[in-house]
Length: 333
Image (cartoon, rainbow, N blue to C red; front, side, top):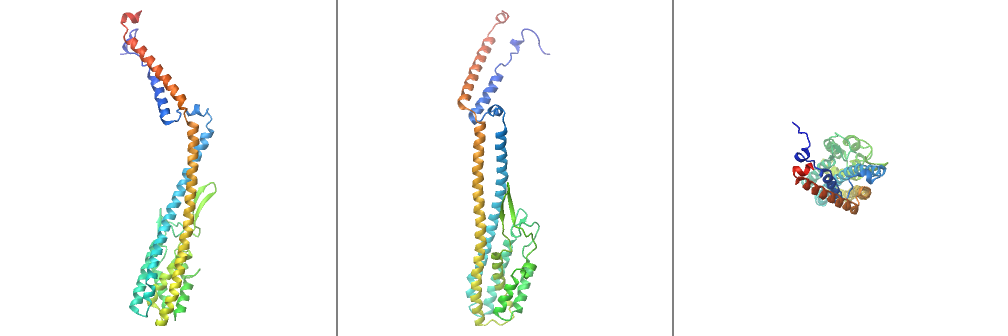
């Protein structure tokens, strides 16, 4: 039952300091953060500037997310290219020794190394990022980029049909040229256009890299050619191995240069991504500074208000204490 009557102020006094304490907490929070709690008052009810800044920060977040995806994509591709380079170098290291004489076991050992290199290159080309094939222009659910079983069957056939070293080299050049068997039968079908990471406002980052790049195709051809040597349809004598050594060393160097060209081109894209990210970060810092300026609280004004509220709170406490000490007779006077 709720009590009524003239004695209620003594039995259930009102907390007159609640609102003052609430204002004091707000002001102290302003002092600590440096930002006003009343945005409408700080902006004079004109929110157009802060809306523009907020929109700019959202655009930054979208661009930054796209750049991050591009950096992940190119970084993974660069790592895969490095794996291909390291694999390919295993052939170059053994080439001169493996072809130093027309020995079947020696040539077979070199061919086995090259066959392992083919597998490693094919594995690197199967790289996927977020379910998309990096070396197949972002194709989804592609499977293997190279049909290595078909490749091994084809190169064995080519080698078996060759009549001498020049014929062997020419048949492989034709097979790996544009429109040749490697392109039509071994490479999986994937989109022709390269992967593009949009940045908004008409800007985008294009990443033109695929298994069909000349630099990639060159190291695959070199590995395939060496791997097929045990299957050649002609007798390899000392003259033939010397001719092959000269040709394959030269071709190996050219293939390495081609792959380095791919890595360098990708490195240029990575450098541009880094520069774009730096520019975006500078824009973000500028926008955040504008927002802080627009919503900042004047520390002197805030301190003055805090002091005023503290004085008011002390007065309320003093009045409350005096009322609490009144006798019933004093209160009724």
